[in-house]
Length: 309
Image (cartoon, rainbow, N blue to C red; front, side):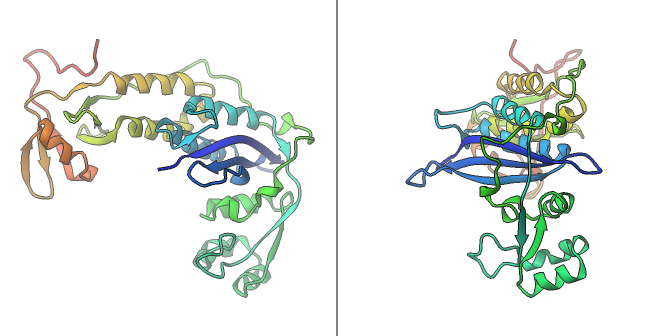
């Protein structure tokens, strides 16, 4: 299986009445596609909040190695930091673009006609009619920046709207006045997940908000899921993502083996299974909401340990 190789990242911005609209560009190639030809693509269009959400989602792929650099692995923290530096001093976006309905399965730039319902409120009557007729609908990246962001928010991928050739050149000036560079937060709450490791050694058990123990998948996937959700806290408490991701990863790594005597309750077959190394291999592949894990009662007056000392 190949990985996506990230080479460079670049942010451009447009001022608007509701704050800057950011255009995120990334230069990538696929490791298993030869020859290796890096190309720019538009990864996102939106405000600071939605841009952070997209950046952290991409960053989560670094945890398992699906997103790497030319020289090898990159930590999610390092990848996210590179994007935040770009957001702090973006280039100025310019130019225009166009959208049109897809002409078929292999029309990678066209937009699925089924998305017209979501697009219609964002288009004029003339634009909607032109789109349905298969004609090009022209939009200006500056004047229509908020509309382009709304179109992406409706479910249209950004690279269908903005060609990679629209990325600002190295010669362009940066505009920190349009940047997202909030002051670092003094508070930094750390998440302490309640976790155990299944006997198969790969899968991790997590206790959810309802107090139910469920298999959350492999450890890198569990950490990746946390990273993908961490953008909200980073938006509220800027500059805390490094410590929070590091603490969560260490907690998952330090999870102890599941206590002997744990029972897996199969909600589909209405059966109970004793969790052993053999049974945990098949249990780990079941859908998360099909199995509940019933841990043995802790010693009287005590509690089960969660992490290695």
